[in-house]
Amino acid sequence: MFQGSIPALVTPFKNGELDLETLKKLVDWHVEQGSTALVPVGTTGESPTLSLREHEMVVEEVVNFAAGRIPVIAGAGANNTAEGVRLIKHAEDVGADAALVVTPYYNKPTQRGLIAHFTAMHDAVNIPIIIYNIPPRSVIDMLPETMGELANLPRIIGVKDATAKLDRVSAQRMACGPDFVQLSGEDGTAVGFNAMGGRGCISVVANVAPKLCAEMQAACLAGDYATALTYQDRLAPLTEAIFTEPGLCGAKFAMSELGLCSDEVRLPLMTLTDETKDKVRAGMRHAGLLN
Image (cartoon, rainbow, N blue to C red):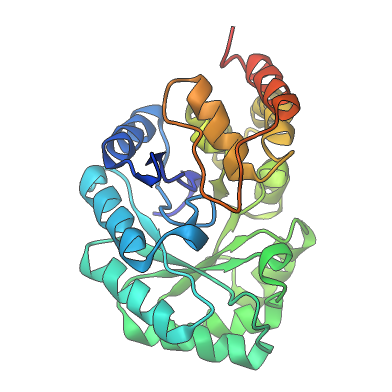
């Protein structure tokens, strides 16, 4: 159910407020372009600067707009377990198909604390949970043996791995079993991640090039890595450009160039510098997205 190209959906703004009309158009576009699921209000959805009510509204609206056409994996991360339980219960209540739960950031729990946090989230709901392990942002790294212990819980079904360590895929297969769904959280290593045993990517770049990302992931799932590499070659300069500054800023600018949404972001993030804009445009031209 959870595989292929899964955009970590941006949250469009208009004059500082949620732009729900544009959000609906983006959901429709991703369905048409072949995205296999959507993740609203992850980091790319600017969850750190959304209010709790805004967070809930985005999940509600994406579930409504998707209307069962593709799964919705709601971001439900928090470094406060009680707040996380509230978010994941809300996601279940409004019909999300699963939840993406990041390792708690800033307060640096132990591995034992990670097990307690994810167990509390698991026990609060009846929807599947995908662990989001991203040490560069959360500082804490969930070790494979910890993930293996959590994988024994029936509703913890996979991981979004943003460690950029491809050997982790093998270690997590050993700890969690081959049926544990491993999704890349790093666009630049997505093909290699799949070759190690991954099943797809929760992607920033798929906000901009959903069809190319979906076709690349489909080739990987079919075992056709020669074709997947041709897509990787088309996307590599765009991927590098988008992550020159925070990825969601690069993605929103590229989307604005395609007329999909505004490049507006919330402080402390800022719109791109002119130099980075030129780099993103060049990457889009290389990928065939701009003339």
